[in-house]
Length: 594
Image 1: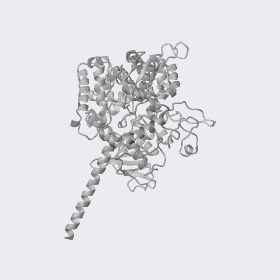
Image 2: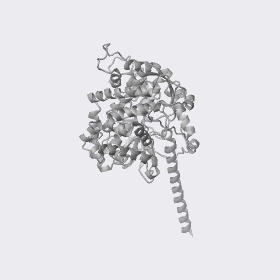
Image 3: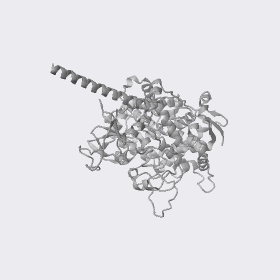
Image 4: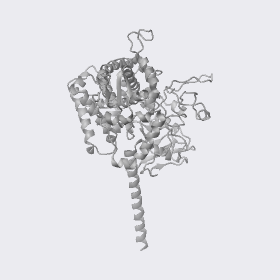
């Protein structure tokens, strides 16, 4: 009898444990699916510098935001933290490139892209891209008309200009810029869902879009449409055969457009805000500088010079917009059991520039957090075994959220959420200072906290902490492009895309943002764009569970971003985690002659 009772009690305990696990998994799934960035912000505020999601049937996803842990995430040797498994997973699941084919060609592709998109080669690409954008702008932004959505204009112009440059006119003319643009938008909109464990059999829109793009690439490969193009040069140099070429081309297409388009949009609308009109005038002045005034050679395009100059207004605005609207997740894998630094655990005492608890109805304390006791496992050589840290196991997925890191007051002590591309102001301290690599825009104040945390600078000089300064390849956009050996090889080209488009648009015409209340009426206006994307409304479940938290996060974000941002800018897509945020509503504007 007692034995039967004990067995029954054990069964009840097991059932309750299983029920709790299922409830936790469902809570996490709904949080990531519906809450997106708001959910990650909530966990970061409540759980501190380390929290884990998942870990049931698959590997845990461990988010890290301690500055030193972020540095190690990008710089640790592959014997500790690996990039390859994460890249292979996406390449196979999203682009259908087998793992055994990806790794041998990855390093060759990255070297080829860096050679094609840096130095004097980048200058040549920028000159050509400027000409292509200039040809498309008059039809996209005719003076005296209302534009229904600036995002559609930016997407249409930049997409066609870039794919013609990378893949050639023969490819675009054969398949149509509109058709390619619509298929790419559907592919990119469903990218994150395709990369998730959800069976792709249940994702017909993504599969159709991918099939169309891969089919277009295969057809053009067979018809030799890519002869003499940049993509053909890269594939030939990397010894990629015709069978793998379409998948590689799709990956290059996504990498060149998925983040550049929204980055160009946010940069443009931010400089068009009434309080930032002086920035638009500076950019216009740079882009229209008289070539015969002696400032530039007669054969030089001043807009190109500005786009490639890190100190220009166009470049500084692009870097700052990318930093603010940066991706919410960058992923690696733990190659072995180790301990990473973590100084703020289970507390929200500091840090985000936007306060408040983003917790939603489903934001229960079901995710794993860590205590600060030293790990008993074998630790990383870079972390003393007696120091506070977070234990991760071999096979765990490690993640850093640039969107949150860039708003961490330990790294950017004064108003990190504010759009402020003001040039650095020299310090009154006469001692020479070594500038941080590319991050010199204006937020940080010279105070005790900055000095104690390894941050220097004064006045309007933004200084990231030494933890981030130690990451090779860090840019004015922070860690938006990654860092270390696996930073984005097309980083310079991407920022040049953004800067060029904004410079040429501002030089081409005067744009006036309409208040967001006019967006509904603007939906009926003719849109001057080759590609028009639908605006998605939140579903019933999202409105019930996460809308209050998301609305609160968005309001805090825009109140801190800039004056009048709430009145003129659309909300961003909080569910987009992998790339730079896309707008979630239309942005109407009036066009007048420059």
